[in-house]
Image (cartoon, rainbow, N blue to C red; front, top):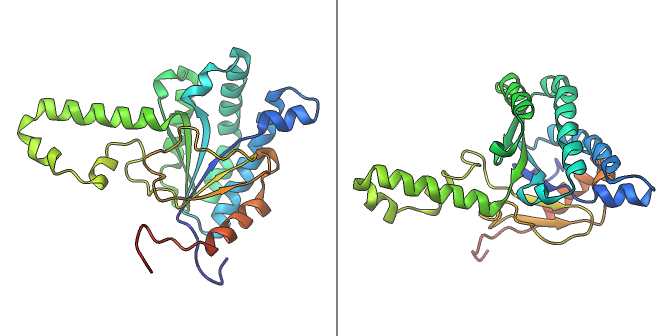
Length: 240
């Protein structure tokens, strides 16, 4: 990758295939989720090594709350355990940890663990690891619209500012404010859809869909995705 220097600033991954991976091995779906934590660690380390500045992971969607209660509970327990175990690694590797999403739906214990990890890693600057938890793209845009509407209601004199608002101004109302839009979005497991993920932010992202199931997606697969990205010609609607 260093030959051409085309390292994406922001790589995002829709982590898919944990349940299928476990079922193929005669295990319960939660076994796949636990194995997927190792892939998170591997890709985070690869991102640091390759000079990626932002790595975001779609961990749990708003729609995932509709899954069986046992699976949801186990996933939440895994997240707490993973944060506790990975904190020393993040500190050693200079990783800043951020969680975005509808955190009102999370337990007090999980929110406390998130706040602690975010606080302890806040000064790290080699990589920002963004975990999207209880998130959906439509929810994000709706919340942004609500913020804007309430702001205008409190300050009607700013109507002209709203009427002249640019897309980059509206981006500041999304939960990803201050984070660059993803250059590359990877989805594992062979599915070819966004599944309500970063619908606004993905407008000009490059996409890579791979058959590899998430627990098998490690450093080699991450680096192969970066190599594929380096071949892409990003024109943003222009002619080169």
